[in-house]
Each structure stands twice: as C-alpha cells, then as structure tokens.
Amino acid sequence: MSFDFKEILTTFMVLFAVIDIIGNIPIIIDLRKKAGHIQSGKASIIAGVIMIVFLFLGESILTLIGIDVHSFAVAGAFILFFIALEMILGITLYKQEEGAAMNASVFPLAFPLIAGPGSLTTLLSLKSEFHTENIIIAIVINVIVIFVVLKTSSRIERMIGQNGIGIVRKVFGVVLLAIAVKLFTSNIKFLL
Image (cartoon, rainbow, N blue to C red; front, side, top):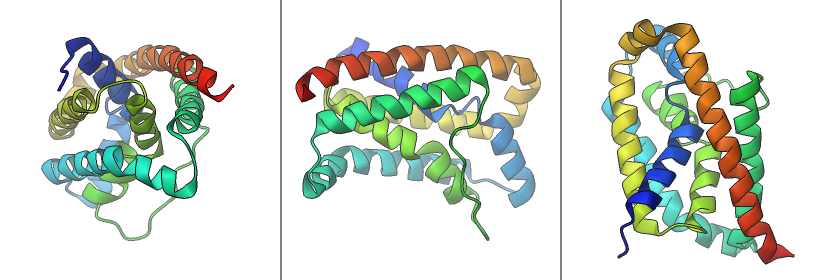
C-alpha cells in the first residue's frame, strides 16, 4: 500500500475533468425536467461501481483481446485529447446515442454520462502510471463530489451561471489537454 496525496490529487483532477460533472449541469437539469426525478445517490453509486469494476477487470479484458496497457494508455491519451478539445473549443466530437424509455438515474446519467468511454479509458490509462489504491480513493472522492453536484445542480447553475460553467469547462479542458500530452509521451516510448 503506497498512499500518495499527490497521486490522489492528480488522479482526482483527471477524473473530475473527464467526467466534467460541472459542465454537465445543463444536461442534468434537462434530464431532471424530462424524467421528473433523478436519484442522485443511485446514479453516483452505480457510476462508482462501474468505474471500480472496470479498473480491476479492464486490464484482463484487454489481455483477453490481446492489447497491452501501454497501447490502451496511448489510445486513452487520444480520447482525453479530443475531450479536452471539446471542452476548450466548445465543439461536439462525440455524439451521445439517444435512449428510448430510460431510467435517467442509470441511463444516461450513471452510464455513459458519468462512467462513460472517456472515464473508463482514463482509468486504465491512469492505472499504467499510478497506484491502484490512490485511483480508488480518487474515484470515491469523485463519486462524493458527483453526488453533491447532482443534489445541488440547480443551485450551482443559478450561483455560477452559464458563463461560470463555461469558464470552469475551459479551465479543466486545458488541464486535461496537458494530462493527455503527458500520458501520451510517457507511454509511447514503451511502444517504440
């Protein structure tokens, strides 16, 4: 066990930026209007469980299909790069599929909005660089933050406004872009 506050903070920031729960407040509010009610606790716990399970089983799944962690980390760096571009430039590269009848707390909120392709890829990419116990702590902290944001989403939107949400999104986009570059450079050398 090697708990490292710096690793926990870095991993938390990366996941927080990828999940982009603050930037998703308008989507959450829209879901709340459509579905009538969102179970914040249920959505947070399901997303956390999906992320932790993928953290442990994701590598086995990759091995089963013949992909090494460094290749996956490089692919993850590309995904982070494109997510960062979306956040910074305000464009949409990833189109979310529309669900028919849905329980908004599970789909699309817990998956794929919170524990989606970006966060799952990020977890395996982070696993190649950080200790698992630090990643789990970062996931738990993120789940707590997600729960609080889901519970108070309408208040947060009123407090920071559309401009505030836009600024937060762009700042985390730049952080995410830098992390994507670091992830790419630290893993590409294993493939060359």
